[in-house]
Length: 208
Image (cartoon, rainbow, N blue to C red; front, side):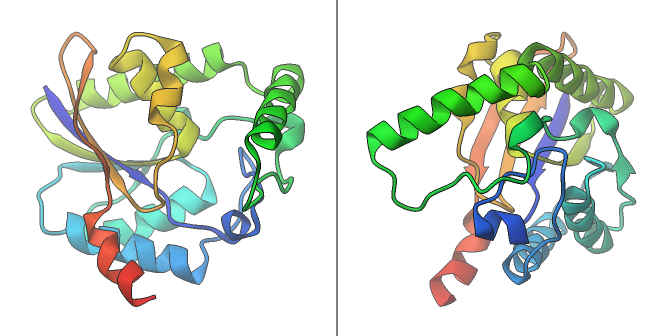
C-alpha cells in the first residue's frame, strides 16, 4: 500500500486569462505562488518520503516551493506531464458566463480538434497509470507527494478507481493548489481518501 497526495499546481497567468496550457506553459501568478505556499505550509505538517512532479514549469515551480517546506527534492517525472491538446493549446477557451448551449458547442469542437491534433486519451491514460504505479512500486508502505495537472488526475482516477476511462468526467474541477489523497494497493488499484481538499486555501480566499 502506498499513500499518495496529488497536488494540483498553482494558478498561472494563463489560467487567469482563460487560456489552455496543455504541454505549453506559463509562470505561476501572484495568486498561484500564494496557493503553492499555503499548500507547502499544510504539507510540511505531515511526513512524506518523496516528492514527484510533472516536468512542466508551472508544476516544477509549485513543487520547488513545496520541496523547500518539506525538505524533499522534487523528482521530475515525464509520465506526469499534462495532456497534449494539440491545436487548442495557448488559445483562450474559457468564458466566464456561458449558456448551456454555448458550453455544449464549445465542448464538441474542443474534443474534435483534440482528436485531430492532440494526444489520444488512451495513450494519456496508459502513461499516467504506468507512471503512478511505478512510483508506488518504488515506495511500498510509504507516503508520497506528486504535483500534477487537471487532465492527468481525471484520467488517472478514472482508470485506477473506477476501472473505466470514460469516468474521467467524475473528476473534472480541481482547485489550483488543492489536494487529492489516494491509497494505491499492491495490485495497482486506487482508493480515494479525500477528493479536492482545499481547506488550507480557504483563509486566503476569505481575505482576498
